[in-house]
Image (cartoon, rainbow, N blue to C red; front, top):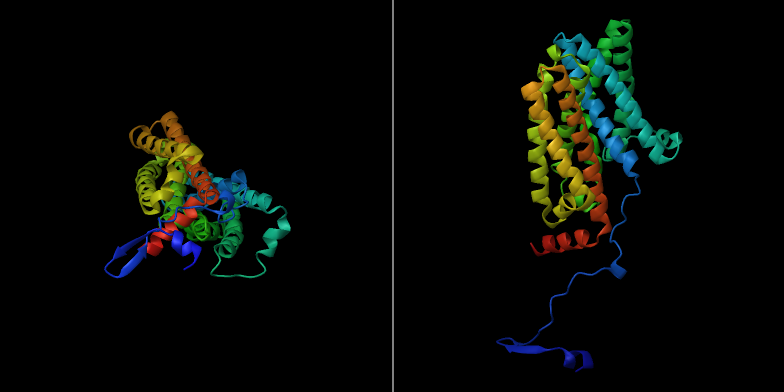
Length: 314
C-alpha cells in the first residue's frame, strides 16, 4: 500500500472499502479564464450590432410605408437605414483595423460561418438600401428605387438578426448558452429601434403601424430576455449584475415606457418623438448590455466550467 492510499480516509461498506474523498471544488490555473474573451471593442461591435439591426428592420418599415401610401415616413426610413448601415460597416471596419480586412472576408463564402454570411449580406444590402434612399430623395429612377426598396426589405430581417447568430456561435457562455433566444432577441430589439425611428422622423398621421409594432416588439423583447436568462441558469448572473445588469434593466424600462407612450400618446408629435427616442435608447442598451454580459462571462472561469460539469452530470 502506498503512502497516498494509507492516508486517504475510507469507510467500510457492503462491497469493501470506499475512499471518502471530498467532492472537488471548482478552480482554474491561477484563476485565469478558461476561454479567451473576445478582443472586440465594445463601442465598435455593440454599436455595429445596434446599427445593423436598426438598418435591417428600418428597411422593412420603409417598404411597408411605401406600399401603404406613407411617403414621408417611407423616405425618412430609407435614408435612416442607409445612414445606419453605413455607420455599422464603418464600426466593423474600425474594429478590424483596416478596410482591406473586410474585403478579404468576401474572397470566399462559407455558409457555416455567420461572419462570412453576414459580410455578404451587408455587401448586398448596402447598395440596395442606397438605391432606395437615393431614388426616394431625388425622385429619379423610380423603378430602380422600388427594386432597391424591395431587395432591402427582403434582406432586412437577416441583417437585423444575423449578429445574434454570430454572437451565439462563439464559446462565450452568456451568448452561446442563449443561442436559441439571442437571434430572436436581436430581431425584437431591432424592430423596437426601427419603430422608434419611424416615430421620430415620420408625421403623427403616418405612425399608426409603428405604434403597433413598438408594442409587439416590447412584449417580445421582454419575453425573450426572460427566456434567455432562464435557459442560462447560473450564467444569467452576468445578465443581472454589474454593468450588463444595469444596462439591461435600463433597456427594459426604456423599451416598455417607449412602447406605452407610443400606444397612448403617439398621435401627438412631441410624445411620439419622446417615445421613439426611448425605444431607440432601449435598443442601444440591449445591445451594449448583452455585449457586456458576454465579456463578463468569458472573463470568469466559473461560467465556463461549472455549466459544463452540470451538463456532464445530467
